[in-house]
Image (cartoon, rainbow, N blue to C red; front, top):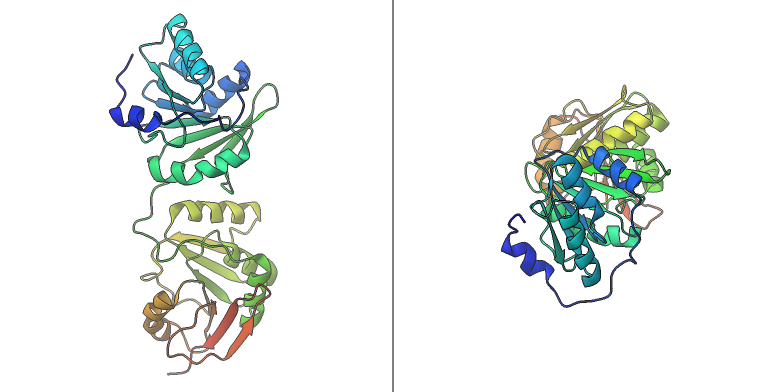
Length: 326
């Protein structure tokens, strides 16, 4: 049996509790489809969270030569898994840990497999983000993970949906503010406040999932650019724009909103913070042409007198400024 780091065992061996989901064995064809979609190779380390009778990591070892770790809270299933590994001739490649999947150290994984309930996947979201390295693949049988958009999907022979995500690169630095999406009706209210037209070049600074730029292009025919430091969000925005057939009008740039070139913009959107708005203020005045408009959701720009303030349908305040002549 290959050596496990002590952290894995120590973290996983917590006081027993009820399993998060009842055990339901994954059909062999589905296990095959999951491992195929993940592109398993001999150098992979496959972690199965809620590993049941161990069949996922055992097949990964037997078919692909990968190493594997199963995390399972039910001692009876752990015993069955260990016996199956011996019978299958892969006990030197796989290990089964009796423990809580929420407490286990999963950082050594290059592939994580799941067959859990949507509510359990959602609770795992933060752990997966925090512990897994960029490039790690996550494969789930049937159920998504929160609001994550899968990078690829497939169907097993029995019709079961299989979903794959790849952990993205971390941002080049910590984002200035955590991502919080703007409700679509509020985006339309921001665009209306700005008087957006098809002649505008819209820049969204901290563009998140891209909805401001996409809706500006979709509703008004504007050209739009989103600046976003988180590569995961950039990929989501590009995918949405691609699905909406707007890649000829919308561009998403992985970059720092504090240093990005904003000179081409006629209309700039912000949903940041008072501190970041204050930091941006000199650049907005210097780099934007007279007549360019700036719209901020919720946060004012210190020292600037708004042309207009309105209350959006969700209760947030929307501020409009026009860059004066020099």
